[in-house]
Structures are given as C-alpha cells and as structure tokens.
Image (cartoon, rainbow, N blue to C red; front, side, top):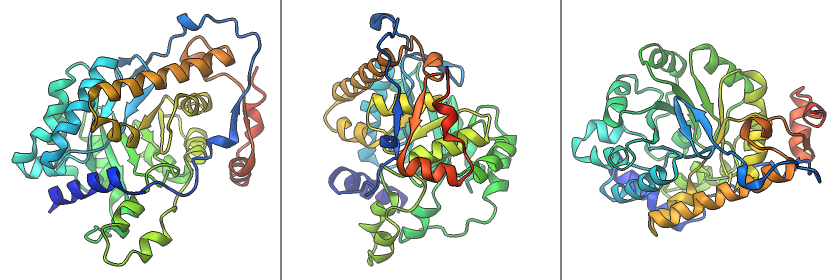
Length: 349
C-alpha cells in the first residue's frame, strides 16, 4: 500500500497542479544593490561546509522519492547529478525500503551513484525504531525526521495521532550519532516549534514553508471528497516568514526550502542567515529527462546565485550573510506582528 501511494505521489507531482496558490514571500525581500562590488565574478566562492561535507554550492535536492520500483531510476539520475555537481541530496521516507526489502534498492541506488556526496536519510517522527536501519541503508551523513501533520490529515489513509512526536524525536536525537534534521513538508515551522526542536536535540531545521509544493494539494487528488484538501491547500507559514522565525529563535543551522526556484531567491534566504536552500519539484521534473538536465538546472542555479553575490559585493557565502536586505509588504507585516525587528537587516554595514 505504501509503495502504491509513492507511485501515485510521483504521478500527481509530475502531471497535476500541486503548488500553493500563494507565494513564498521572497518577493517582499530585496537585496541592496552596490555599484562598487569590488569582487571578481570568476573568483566568487559559493562553497559551504555542512554536516562534515564540503559542497560546491549551498544547495540540497530535497527529499523527493523512494519506495516504489519506478522511483529507482529517478533517484539514480538525481544521485548522478548530485555527485557530478558536488551538492547535497535527500531521499524520501525510507519506511517502505525498511519494511519491504524488495524496495531497498530504490534508496540504495542513491549512495551507489553518489559515493562522496552529502546524503540525507528520511524517516517519520513516530518511526524511532527505523532510524538505525535508515542510517545504515545509505550510510547517511544526516537523518531528516519529516513532520507532515497537514498531509496526514488530508491523506485518505493518514495517521492523525500526533501524540508523542516530541518524545519520539528526542529519542532519535539521543540514540543516533549523526546530525538530525527536523524537516517540514510544505507548511513551514514557527518559532515556538523551532525552540522545542532545538531544546530536544535537533541539529538543524529544514523549514519547508508555503510557496512551493502543497501536500494538501497532492492528497486532494487522491481523496474521494476534495473539499477538505481544497480548503487547506494553502495552509501554513510562508517560506520567507518561516525562515526568519526559525533563524530568530534558534542557534542551529537552517535550511530554507519550500518554493525556492532560483539562485536569486536562494541568495535572499542565505543573506537572512540560512546555511543553504533546498529544492525538490524542479529537479523531479528534470529527472524524467535525464541527469544531464538536472545538472544543467543545478549549474544555472549556481550561476544565478553568483550573479546576485556579484551585485551585492559578496565574494563568498559568509560575506553574503552580512549583506543588507529590505523587507517589505505582507512579509514585513507578519514579522512585525511577531515582534521581529525587520529594520535590522537594512542597517547592516
């Protein structure tokens, strides 16, 4: 049943309108142009270090798939592109590969084709017992614990008992020796939840905010009655707001994701303070065409990021984090309502 659901998800994401009807909020955030950048574009360094690995670009192919035979080829192409461009990659929930050995290779194909890359495993919050096997399966560099209450409540066969998530995640953090990432799945993470996650031992947060793929939308196509899914299609916290909320309330690395589609948006997220960004849907669609198309998308992303860095005078990612930002519109209104001082981003020297 899980495997069939994974195939349905892939087909829906490939062929249907499954994105939020509202934006990420990054259109409200502007980097401040400099006419005297004092940097050489050819020497701009986009590399970062994350979880013990050096990446050539601050980009992770966010968790997409695994758990159905059809997903093996997709993960293979994504992994080849990941290895060739030296970025990071996450896999979909490994539960299916752990409970059904016949599906394990839909995940292991990733490490087989990306032996040196940063690979992030994936299990659900209640699946404490799966953590060791998930790590062993891929020799993962980090393990993501996905949080998807919105998807579960819309999903026809969803698990709507969320009692014990905090203790389960705490147990995973206590019993593993690799970094643990708490990862939403399209509804964002607010500051109160971020504080709890940091307190129980999570090493990083992938915010996965509103503005990209809506998993309420995906499950709406599978539901007999679409009314509930249509009503909650755009539920959640926008990616821009969620990114700032988590950065303002914790001291752990933040991965900004959820509707980020280009290097300029990534530059804004990183200038806010994120370590890197995640992208999923664009890479899924390119993977159907081949790993070369995925690599072209990655290289275009890096070119766009470097262009933004050049125009603000940042020679590396750490310098980009110090550049000025102007936050306007609805994003500023929401952040101000949360008592977050948005002017401080504009006052940077």
